[in-house]
Image (tube, rainbow, N blue to C red; front, top):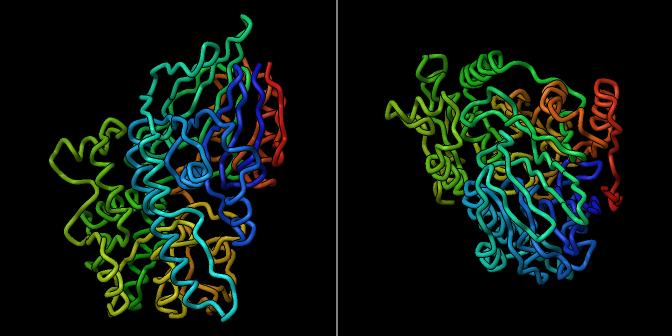
Length: 464
């Protein structure tokens, strides 16, 4: 028998973390960082709801920080077991966890300089040393290879098609001669997105943990998105403005670069400078080049022809902070792409602070924005937002391109799960806000007649 307890991404989108007790051992499926209200995020992230020493191993679906970001804190609190992931996920997680530690240290330093006298200093969740102690714990498990975890439990990775190296995880328990199969979707990607392959069809299972980020929505097609991106670049440049693009360093930055590369080759955007401002995005782009085994046909054609899908002459990749600061003095139109995707940390905050009050500029949001994040407030057209604690008027135009999302929408999730619907006893919806999860729950029960629940924080279920 397996017991499943939901601690993260339960009726919310971030902080993916699910506890699995099986064959006398305890596992975590993901160990992600929660993003949202600063105080609530601090509380959720800093305190684990179980004894850290009780965890035997972690199975990581992919490298995004809301799935991997609390691993160094787990290690800081005493965890020393293996962290299983695909080879590409391990390479990405190495870069991302070190970068997250560095950003926390820098942001805390910046905030402490602005602290009022007598206030206690802000401490980072973890530092670079904690991240470095985490890296040797990673153990590679390639796609489709069976990994034996114990005498009665094994698992296998399938391609989730979400980001480079992302996996859907099938766990098989064979305790007492009875087999129970649990499928953890991770984040399900979409067919026909640039660069990486679409998601594998899922294997048969008895229980499914399914993400529901876009459970209540349907994305627009990719074709119009490229046209819209071209239009946004042209209009912003025509009024002499800067296009500021908060983007996830893994996946979204590379997608945008590829689309801008194509638009540039086609002569559909003006000849203006373009920058990717992020040491992490520069490192991640190198990691993408190192893993062509994850590429789709289009990206492989670029590689086969000797062309670099992630670089072109108008594009400058910026690593050093001194070069980043020089972008503040740029006059005239340009494109600046910088993490974090939800505008919660890193260099993008400085670019927003310097450009948000100028009506010539455009802020382009290209992915899901969790509740209470700065990115969500921008999408919701708040007239004023706080950046580094300072209120700022939103005079820049705010546009959104949600079809670039690497998350499957409701229609795509239903189509993805169709091959296993006949074997399922129950579906657990995670990684979605209540309205999206409720819409997907209704659609699954209506279409497939499978019992579906959206568990709350700390809810436990016996799987047998």
